[in-house]
Image (cartoon, rainbow, N blue to C red; front, side, top):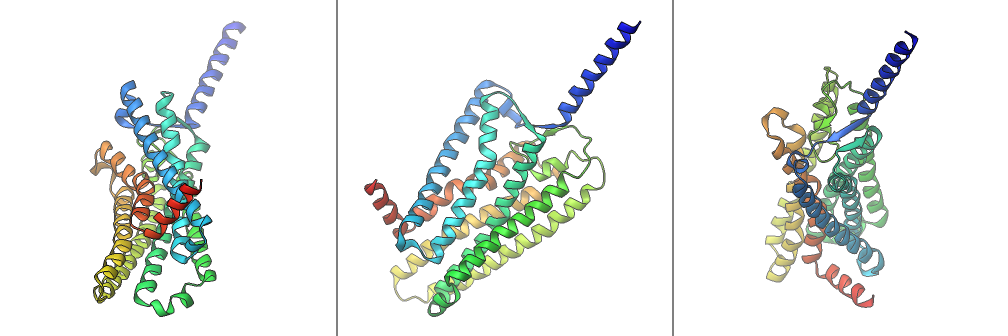
Amino acid sequence: MMEAKDHLIRIGREDAEKLFHKMSEFHLTEIAFADTRELQVLHFSLFLGIYLAAFLGNGLVITAVACDHRLHTPMYFFLLNLSLLDLGSISTTVPKSMANSLWDTTAISYSGCAAQLFLFVFSLGAECSLLTVMAYDRYIAICRPLHYRTIMGSRACVQMAASAWASGFVNALLHTANTFSIPRCQGNAVEQFFCEVPQILKLSCSESYLRELGLIVVIACLVFGCFIFIVLSYVQIFTAVLRIPSEQGRHKAFSMCLPHLAVVSLFVSTGLFAYLKPPSLSPRALDVVVAVLYSVVPPAVNPLIYSMRNKELKEALRKMIQWE
């Protein structure tokens, strides 16, 4: 009788341990990526190629700007900060997804998920603020060139960059604290290749998730306000550029500004869509595609866009490669 009782207690303890272990982790269900080994290898290969391109491109930009004294200007200072944020953003999400595909698993620990969400939201928030600062820098450089050195002094640039990083930190802290304080009763399967706020909210089982939704709406309004500021800045920039008598001068100004505006539009539009859309209005495959567009594509293409369109940066990279 005692043996049977001990056996039941042991079974109950083991079940409790399994349940605790299950609830202390999440599973990143990446749709078709987990169905067959071939798709897992394809997923790993694609993400590896994108990650290496982003790492190499952003690394070269950071090295060139840091080592070439001719690039120690406000525009390249902000570009260096953007490359740092892009490296942090893509390194937060892609390597874990690659590892899961390679080792045929979907698990991520509770603390790992929280850290991933915090670092990713931090990178997004800081990058949005920094893109706004970069638009302001271009506006001053083109529309008020005589006042550029006065307005965009080294101290002002450091303060603006620090403000961008600080805004990302506060944004990430609020989102992470809100998201992981909400009770969950819908399982632990996150339908994404990384821990994303909207997907974790789908696991909630109480109306307390409305607090996080309210925060998302407020942050989205701020992001949209930044986007409007960027667009208005470029309206002024393009108006000034069209007055330039030299065709070469107009071409140079447009080549510097249009890529920036294209990246901002892709980043903001897909990010807002991912965070503001009702979950039931889009299929799971579309959620993954949108996530790739705002989390993986910009860090990979930013270095290419800025280096290919910028003669000074290309020259610095060429000299750096030849010197090595």
